[in-house]
Length: 172
Image 1 (cartoon, one colour):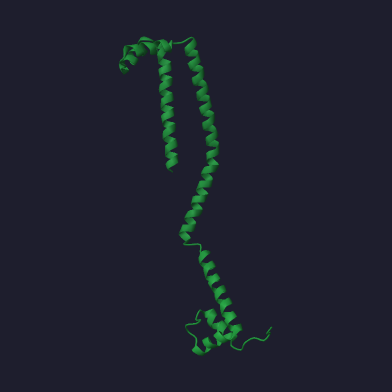
Image 2 (tube, rainbow, N blue to C red; image 1 turned 90 degrees about the vertical axis):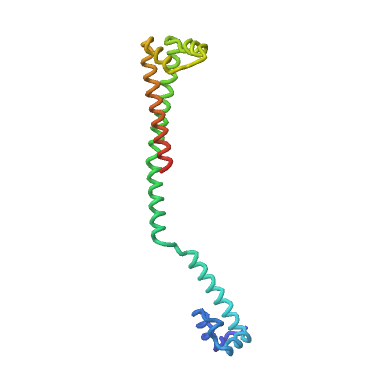
């Protein structure tokens, strides 16, 4: 084992650190590195460290500041939307359950006591043609139809407006 260093190691290491090895060195120094095991090992190790440092500094480059700011703003906005969306989802589920319960109660009460919906649908089905004027004349002839028609219209409007708001939120 050789403990003393080569006298030319400082010159070789300076060239490798500046990135000038082997292009900017004298032929005599290249011949020395080829013959001296300590200098050739030094060049090999220093070049490996230099290439590793260059590669890691390229990988660690964060990119332009504008892109980083935009991504941070996007993450912040998404986190805020998630935080706000949870109570809204709970309110929507509650409203849907109340609406379904009211619809079920209305359907059951109308089937038992009400307007004889099934009989009316059979009459419409037997006539083979259906016009909106027939529905309107039925509603005028039977005033008890006014409330269910109004409820159906309001429910359809609520359903349509809820769908519009939902799809609008999905686009944003």
